[in-house]
Image (cartoon, rainbow, N blue to C red):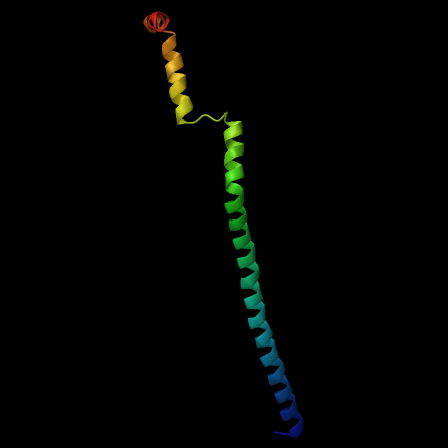
Length: 89
């Protein structure tokens, strides 16, 4: 092998090593990038969850279990016997 070819092979080998290094570095950066995006989305949801629950209760009228029980009792007020009992008391 002549001297010039040997010199080109050494240069080529150095460039390939640098290329592999930068590819590994790029993979690490990509993992860090996506983990920051995913973790920030989870964190944002964690902190916004109470506000979203309040917002949904406003739009649904705040109808919970206790409110549903009071609606059932109001429905029974239409009964004539229950109305008489309330008036007597």
